[in-house]
Length: 318
Image (cartoon, rainbow, N blue to C red; front, side, top):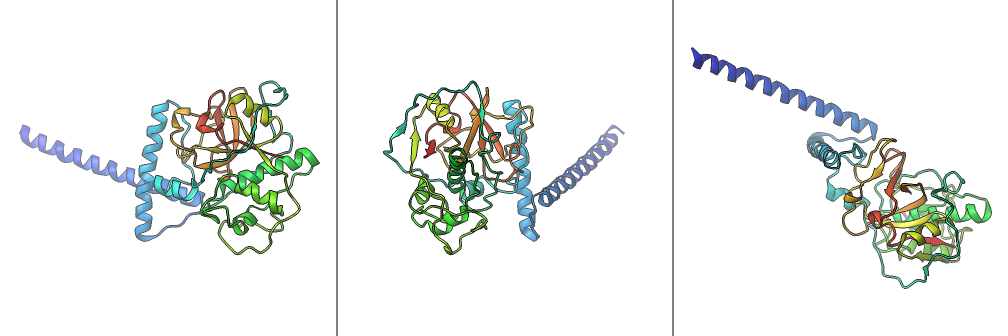
């Protein structure tokens, strides 16, 4: 009798577990379909099943990361259907060339208190979406140039990233395959750049239809690799910076807890962004992965340390 009861108990347990697994799979598929709708993605057949498995693995990684740091910083972003290798290959392809440029060594500029935000001063355009094009260096370079023009002339242009993607062939490897840091600024120095209205962004390689434009700069300064010089330079305007962004893939914080953990900054710089200000606790970074990523397109890096190598390659145009 006991054996029969034990057998029936095992059968019941197996049934419950199978039903639970089925419910979890159905819940996972529902989450995945909601994700596809939110980010306007489409898969079918075997590709759908493969991306579903990638999505499942990424969900587990997000949960594990939040548990390790004890905070809810990571969540679903538009990259949750990509493997780490795909994400890095597509979005993190910045190349850094050794330069011998004169450093900006903190002039006699008084740091105004504990915070500055160039967005509130009208020197920062809205967050853009580079799409599946390795153009972060272009967007960050032009963001610093746009800020420079607002500060010096009162005009905030929206400049053409597509023109530099198409027309600057010495950016290496060039086009949507990424580029050498600083090369987009060199293009603006030599040729000038036009507006996005004149040469709209498409997010893919195409032939150069118009070279140069009226917006030019004279040069740029590389900032000394310390916080005092970094914050002092930011008093002059937004800075183009190179960062280590391999673990930015799932950055989706709350408005109450948003500072990216320094422990997640691992490796060499591979992405370019725009530093637009700082608070008592964080440096404010504008990314080019749309407003659906991060905190409305922004990430906040811990102040007081070289978080994600933010001090290493900061640049100020003039």
